[in-house]
Image (tube, rainbow, N blue to C red):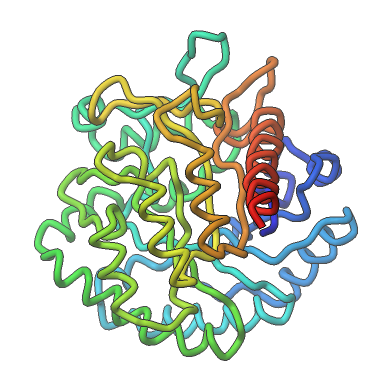
Length: 360
């Protein structure tokens, strides 16, 4: 297992590589080139420069999060083959800088959504929050505008201005698409891309829908254990795998996260784990919380234990943190709370590891 931190290059992050290097036990970062238009090839020279920057800081770059998938692929349009070819070329370029894991999602239109990015918590910190009823009162464009208005000037992956301009049109398109058609489009993508992921030794790790609830009639596919089983059956290669995001799946109280982990880690299909906690006030209303188990609804010990006991040997990052100690950063991606989360998760991993050593 390797503990890493998500980092945004190109001056688009308040957190520096030098600061990340000082977090005990953190060995690398997950990064992306957010300025490359969706669907275009990531140039090798840009990737080599990114690798050099990260390595010079004493950190590893083995995970990319993420190379976004062009909407034409998700829609199943005739133009999808060009964008799939570009995606394959990007995977080839990623392999040339020793990338081992590619986190991506297949969520239509919206990669993720929150009703608030700076929700005040009782302890004086702020965190991202989701209220389903509040979301449904808004039109998609206004959601994007509100989120970008609270982003402190940082980019929000999945909410790029170009994307916002087409959002209403894209949502309207999906109203006439069945769930099975969407699954077919996902299968088409996988069957085209996975053979090259195998060839170039880059494990594909799909991220769950965030949140897992239906919004504006958009399809949801990676949101529970049944759909994850269906997804993995579409292409049985071990290179077709998962990013387990405990916060995304945990937003639905019906999801048993340790059980999901036990099943798919034992199959070797979990390549990446985003670990964070959430605290519900009702079924579809929650705030993101500190990582500590008692701060939310998820049992972090059981989550880490399930990973360790079922052979997980991929990458973990502490997911979204609160804004604490006066920090001003991209919502969810400050330094302090994620550093606390990394230390906590590493402590749990060590405890589980030593517990098993004592039993031998």
